[in-house]
Image (cartoon, rainbow, N blue to C red; front, side, top):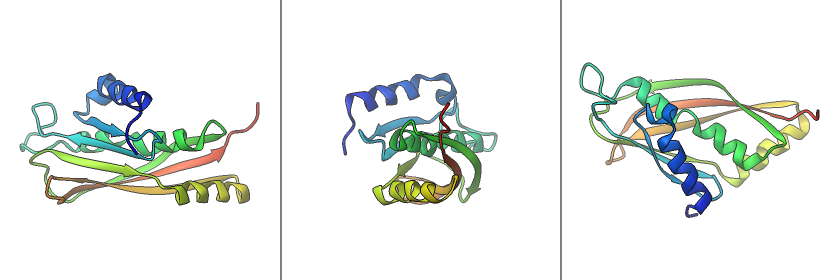
Length: 153
């Protein structure tokens, strides 16, 4: 699905937002339905560590918020969505531009809704890979997201 005017504005907002801009990452695509997001992380003076590769904080920071936001946008206001835990596994030093693609599909969203009919809260774990232009994995990030129904006030 292509970007919409609204998701294009959100992409620009991310790329200008100081918290995200500081990671060195750039959001390059947000699908109109928020089921796919792509980011790019170049090796630059802003992301380079002391040994000349991409700083681990930049690797993590560039991918940090997206699964939580994608779930918030897809599930809607009746759900509370929070980051609960994260882990990063460094596989190869980042010596060039890396990219990551986040995807959510319909069956996953349906499963979350089904589980919340049976229990008060659900934790889901998602994995995103930071890869180079040849598809070689340089880092693997696992995000655990906590989801529950909003309590009426």
